Image (cartoon, rainbow, N blue to C red; front, side, top):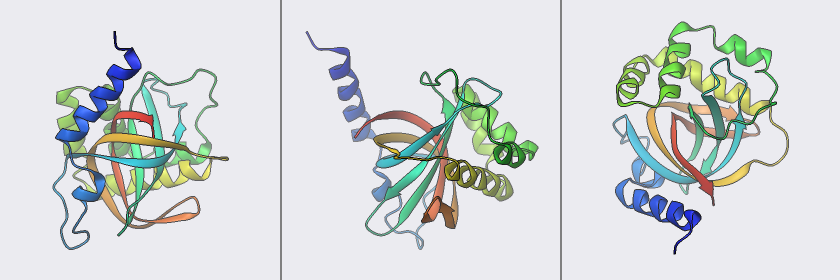
Length: 186
């Protein structure tokens, strides 16, 4: 009998066969820009931020280093891994969420339904909203200390913000904004 862990690994491997790697998706960057929304998978170094008013919402920020570019992540979404006892969001993050369109996009991404995916895509068609969320990720990333988690992440990417943008000590070429499909040990 296979274990749940083996089933989970098999499901991730099957998903990887259906969606491109981040490297494949952004292969021609910046000359060729992929259509959004789109799914991708990659290894990443992620931090988790919770403490949003909506308990379904968590933010993962991090970095994926590809041979030809460095990608920053701003992954917002519902999760079963929100841990109780996290401090509330830092003041700088709350300030970044004063844009009502950015807050609306976050609410849609937290709900995790087909209709809200479409609404999130529509909301993120505004470059100003994308810039706000990329800035939110940058602010959140600065708040973390210690080592990020090295993970294998699959994500639905709704939009991307061309860099350069700093996430911690790293300057990224672009920041992908999306929701995690899976996050697993690398």
